[in-house]
Amino acid sequence: MTITFASEEIIQTIEMVKNENLDIRTITMGISLLDCSDDNLLKLEQKIYNKITRSAEHLVEVGEQLEKSFGIPIINKRVSVTPVALAAAHLDSEGMVRLAKVLDSAARSVGVNFIGGFSALVQKGFTKGDLALIEAIPQALAETDYVCSSVNIGSTKAGINMDAVLKMGEIILSCANLTAAKDGLAAAKLVVFCNAPEDNPFMAGAFHGPGEPECSLNVGVSGPGVVASVVRQNPGADFGELASLIKRTAFKITRMGELMGRTASAALNIPFGIVDLSLAPTPVVGDSVAEILEHMGLERCGTHGTTAALALLNDAVKKGGAMASSHVGGLSGAFIPVSEDAGMIRALEAGALTLDKLEAMTCVCSVGLDMIAIPGDVSAYTIAGIIADEAAIGMINKKTTAVRLIPAPGKKAGDRVEFGGLLGGAPVIGTNNFSSRAFVSRGGRIPAPITSLSN
Image (tube, rainbow, N blue to C red; front, side):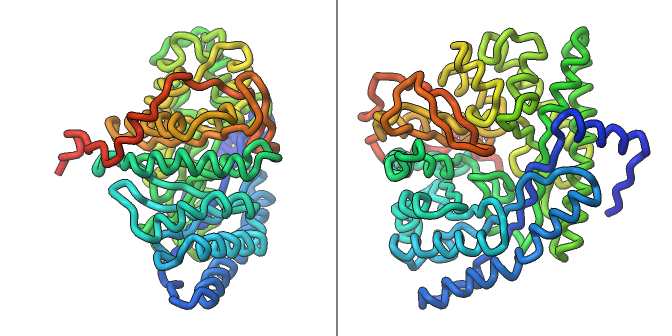
């Protein structure tokens, strides 16, 4: 497939990069580990290390060459692998920790920023491998630098595995407590999904699904600064006009992302997968989804009207991206990770944004409750209740939702945590003081909704 650009589009793209923080947020190579299976743990470790380092040997190099050739920054180069609970289902939790360290070593060797796929898919129940991996998550994330983990606990077709929900509440607390000196950093590398996509290039939830090819190249574009600029420059536009402006902007961003992705996949001699056109913010001023909503006319993100504004933004981005590419996938829309968005942080500090409002916003955005610091003395039952609520939104609405909460050891609501880099920092948000214990302890599976009977 050949993508051609008019000279005007090229000039506009250069301006977006120069003045509006446009970038490729990530190129992520997905690698299947299904052919690495071996009953001998040492041989399994060697096979996995060899396959990752062989497949991704030139990933960073190609990314850097593309940055120079096109003049467009590629912020992250990443790898995702087959969910480890599938690829190494016979291991116990100790073996799973060892494999996490192998993934970490391979990621360091090829020079990527993160490696995702220390994952399990348990929406209908646990295998022995699933349980072993989940038990290993806290130690694995605390003792590695690059490994990210995800667990899918529900889906529209399967319902919600409430035993897994409660278990993940406990695991998130353990992750935070093991990295208390770093404000619970390990929990920032763990996401709990409902309806997890198999081709998502963004961390911490990226994994190479069992329906994916041997190897593929997925691209995550960004551009909240570009969209914010368009909205800011059109204060008199009505909502129909505003949606059209955002669609046209998303179209340009997505075309650029697909061009970069296809060029990278050709250079690496692997299939091009998808372009995820999500607006992914950063702590950098001017690179914020919250600011887009405020430019629409909200005094502060979180005030009344915020959910409607986010719905318009998310829908327009998807429509523009779908017109630009036949290979849109992943999550695609607008992210609202609190600690990674300067506007969200300001809204929290001003008292305009609460946990309940963020939950309402997740009904119409691309992911869920993302990168939210909560008090360190929160119970596993409260975390499980938050996960269940978010999973229910995803299950009923047939969309991906996720929870990435960071209990901050020793911190209370109003204190601040710092993670550094793209993860940023944020105020700690209070949770509801009333208990969810009896509810989340019932166990079993919340049944799939009637809309699951779609065949």
